[in-house]
Image (cartoon, rainbow, N blue to C red; front, side, top):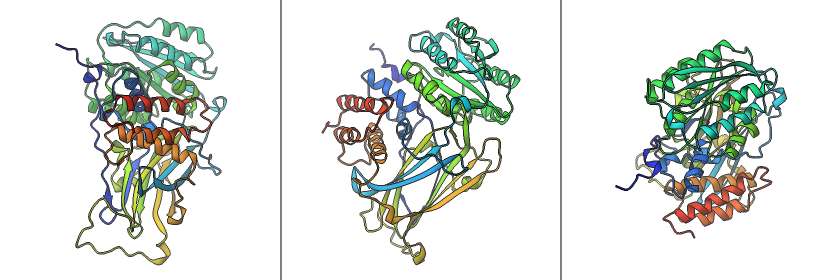
Length: 479
């Protein structure tokens, strides 16, 4: 029998594209922000291996948010600034794209509070390949090199059993920490839940009040001993996060990779999910983005937009399918949402159908026509964000109207807006192109190429190559 392709045994959460909503029926859209980037590097791994990713592996918002954007920093005492921009959608001139961009307050590495970091490392037999434990060890040592005297690193492992390999050790003891990492070897089954429990206990023992307390779980997610059900793991981690200890996940490897679990437990652990497919990605996550990986500046960040039915007929949120919230969740401070790290940029895009444009959905025959007071007639919608300061249980509100006259031509839109549009189109094409009309990868490439900007780390240049790979592997004509 022919061998199954590697991704056939990988596990992904089922995603259904957000539907087009009629404002007359559902004027309010609510979701949790998402700073994960794992989907992008996982998709890159598959394309580099000569395979198109399954649609469920493509979370468009994670592709968009893989890239840092040049948004202005906050000028007040808030932890982040909010920027909006609107212009026609490049794939459909009948639609308008609304971008909501968030820029977190940046913190220099030297100014970070003391960090209590627990490396929780999977050393089971499934990690015994070059793209797993060896890459994991090299990646973690990149972070060790950045640690300071006031920081503490612990190392916990799990396989058939769990062990504390390294008790809390000062960040300046780099040789000791690196030697402990170098000595890790793979073998045995995978008691992941027990490892998570031991890591939380270790983090609690060396807890730093008013500091950073974070577990970095590095694994392929192939738990096969003890609690392996994602729902049970999430419940356990939801309870543990009340201690003030966050959990982020670093995914490794192919074949039996459990991406569904990795993404979901980072979400409930008040952390972020990253997928490490190369040492360059390890450097991006653990060195270039160290402050945002470790330090949280805003918790439980939620976005809500009420659209004006006299100005907007329809809307569709691009991506964020598994981050949807009920309308009443927005004001409920007990509902968990995404966190923003220091310096993070977060981008969300809506596709809008304005009044007077051809709609996707027929209007209901018996629905009364919208009428709005003239003072609000130029408002496209009302944007609200809720967030909590770290350590606070009460949220704060940011809100302001979105004005119709702020819509620009696509040519007049910022280069950052146009590049994000290109990435959004690319992600939607990888998912089947249900809403992108006649657009092809050649159109995406042309738009991205014209808007690579300064590209300090070369991420946007690499994106052009990934567009070419998807075009070569895809079934749709290239142009």
